[in-house]
Image (cartoon, rainbow, N blue to C red; front, side, top):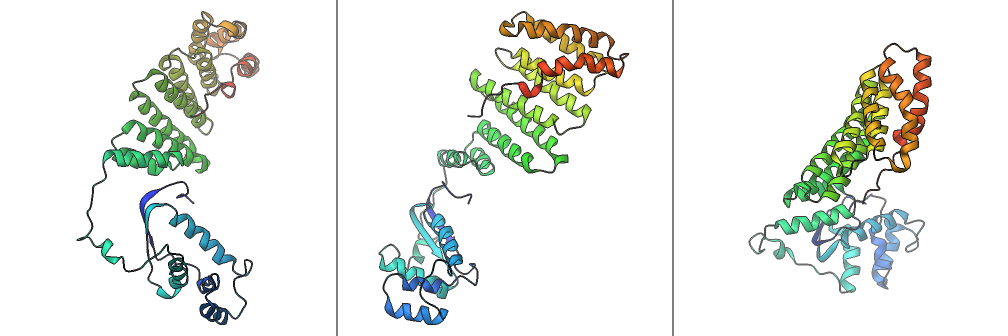
Length: 325
């Protein structure tokens, strides 16, 4: 399945027939092109009528996989199989169609083949192909072979995100955290400002994902890092979104008045250039001021009352993250 969409100059298929299920009766292929002698032998061997799509459903599935494998080749497809008996019906069928021939062992001889080391351009071209097919782990290695460390980091970050999505819940936070670091490193190697900003926003979003699977103290740290990236790394700064992250961080440790003070300071900065968000930011000042001054001494009821409007207006889930390109 992973090979769909990929192409190579040469493809080698090894022991496909020998490893196919025993229930797969390759001999029935001899009945498909009018070879009466072979058809009679195949029918006698199976003790049944020639090819039937229901009865031969395993053969159909094997042929689908073989089709995908063979059509990955741009120039040549080499088939080696230790079971001459099982490979023969399809080989004879393809030979009669003029698309297969035997006796090419010499072409595979090391002494007769001109070897060529893959260039960086070859690796990068293949990496692009792997990336388009979302085969991140293979693309990551190919980019490294081609010398493009930045794109290797991006592919590695995407690989880690995919792994985090299916990992046990207790492991997801760490996997997302490592993915965010990969995108931060990718941003540090990006000379173009807009592309750098895309990687930074992606890292911030992934840290927020890490926070959703972390303990309160670690979640607070992840939200804070996301807020710092949106506040200090992106140009222009995404102050309101950064405020949402800092409010999310403070929510994890609501008695920490310094965390609320950080959010209050950012709200003041955002208000200076708030535009359509002015009303929301002004409404946030009263609860932020209370929490920055009184969080340590406040009762649970007071904390809940003060936090409620903040979590409603500045929820991390409300951030409009850019879609991945």
